[in-house]
Length: 420
RNA sequence: GGAGGAUUCGCCUAGUGGCCGAGGGCGCACGCUUGGAAAGCGUGUAUAGGGCAACCUAUCAGGGGUUCAAAUCCCCUAUCCUCCGCCA
Image: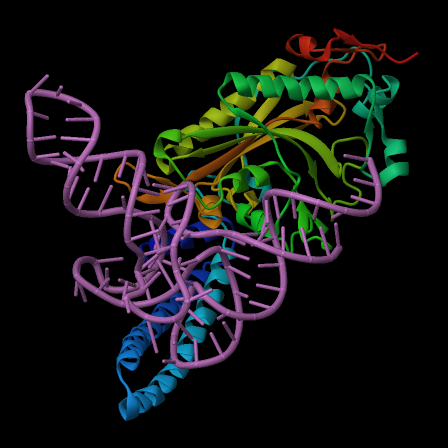
């Protein structure tokens, strides 16, 4: 949620942000006008209410005829108060709805434009030259007895799968390695709920009603999270955090659920795009003025993880139009996928500034004792998709896969051998 | 799933229609006292919004209702506790 006060003082910031996203900046005027109307409605209500309260006191003191007369006038006033209140509430609701639909103000440093207008910040490592025809991750996964898509489809439908044997071990090892790195860096490890209430979903910046990615359990009014970011953002909702506790860093391990609606025909092979996967996610609450630095730190921790799996990757600075609702800036690390001849997203780190915290009521008390909204950030440490990059980049001609050095203690194997 | 009880200011609690945004205790902060400390005494101690100064308004789990007036009465919902049933 955008801060109304900032908006009043500097509406051009939001206008510029909207344009950077490639969206209309006319909402700014609607917003300002609505805010004006709401405030005047609120003032009339408050004035009337104050009058009503003082009259109430006179009524209690009066008696007889005087009381009857006062009562009549008070009744009148009560009706007026009711109308004024309803009007103020109506406008307030309208304003909240409009305000809630406006995405975060983009960091001016983010590239302008849409999905393809990202800039590449850094390329790390060199794609390997194969002296044999590399197999894709699914072929390898089946050879190794690691991935079973067919039975996944039998049991749950398309885009579901089983990780089996060394596949299961690989994922557990990978995520455990991520957890360990996080713990060593001072993160609090968390295993989070995957079903959340609508307000938690909405607070994090997802549209419960419209978002086509969200699985819903209407019977219970619960929603499956697409990432533990949602649960971790909600964790401190409506709390005032002691200033000294910041930054608060959590590492959440959870399954993630995505409907992948509208992606028919895309990445249908293997586990690149699936309805359910596992992820270790960093989440940080910090002071707004430290958010940019914190964002760089999260990015560095992602790079540390990627170094451990020894996969070439590049870092992109996502363009404004592709940031989504909550992010002011987003860096993705994309790993090299040999059989696709291109880089695919392995991590994503977003600086949501105070946007989520304002919606969720996460505040902290500063040195002057004043409360202010915290900034929130998130970033990926490892996901099921990483298995794709690991298998493909470390495969050998015979279909075996060398486990990256750092991962070996966690997987308990040096080489994954094809099942006999 | 059924029955009952609970939910007030960081914590404990007072409060059954107007004098209650709300008293007391604890905790915390500041001050006085002291050589220093403890004790003692005093003052302060929610959040949000509007003017942004005085002040005003809202909030006693959340929502709705009754009333001139609700922490207080009525209805619904949520959470927690106890008991019963059911399932793991």
